[in-house]
Image 1: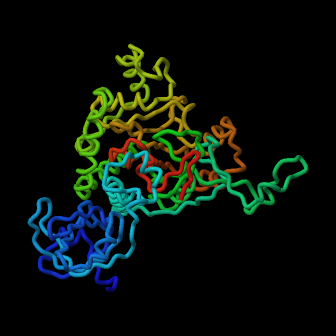
Image 2: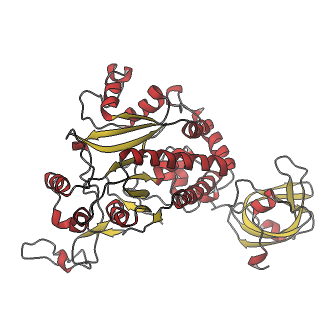
Image 3: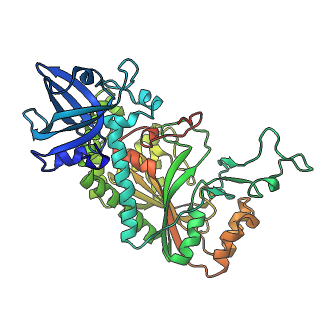
Length: 483
């Protein structure tokens, strides 16, 4: 049986192939005997639903049937027939079965029962075979496609920015060093320090934390660009919200101001949410029910304020509220949770860095719609953000979603050379290390702006998963670098 003959299960279940003889290949989810018939649920990952394989008594050898267990991979030739069972319109009457790979039922860890997410994280190499992770990864693919489609339709160019860099765009210092040194005997200079002049790149380098700075270079030549690539942060955080390796979407636009950027960010995320609702209906319905079942075992105060599908519709249907940071602080300072000291981080003075609990209060309780906060204090934001006329705030913005808080962060970039170098000096960033970046301000500078969307944070929202490690195939976090 040649590979070219294979028909995907989604095409059989959704197509008009009644009476056709086809070849399907996939993995066994369940197998059960009923009188003189064996029923096999086969799944190839193309769709949530399984294809029921019907094996009549005597049509397949007992030896072959005995080797068909949960997890085994099969190639099945048969006729597509109308199904008499519930839940499917068609099934496959098997004419020939080849076991491509057996799975010892005594050792295969994914037997047909409910498994905890914690257990599945320990076997991340096998968890795509479950309904939950099959749904997540199909939605992830749909969102990747939608990202590229959105920006392509708007005339943006996709730019690949470097993974190995000599800069720290965020200035936080939480970087992974890259070297080809023998770390047991690294070369050292006269001062006893490691001599990075002898390293592969002739200087100290690290894995990128953001493609933004390089993206700005491209935007100041090509106008509208976006990056979509991996980023790495060595944060010492072992939480459900942090990863050491994640994917970022970062558009940069020449001749955009902050309002233009807020408009684009709102249009972008609403486009993605609507695309998911239109193209991932079956997988979202499964995850919605899964989340509802999960909530039944929680206390009322710990349950989600909205179901997954309600949250998605909430974003798709509501224009985003826009308020300044100063207005947000006033609302939070006067809120009941703050006055009754229910916030973990109480809001007292202007200049406080907003936490997830504050962001969710504004979205879920106060405005009951997505919120964009803009014009943040300069001293809590990065060096590249444009200083406003008041001298104390910058043209920065965050987009806040229900259930998750901040999902996008962006700003108008500081295009004025003198102001930018002054900020860098105040923050201890050496201009000599970023001359290539400063050249864009010296030669034909222009107003420009951009934002970043952490793809896994967005995937948490789209799928309703609480732990960010469940929305990326192979999560990397402190103490975890399997596979």
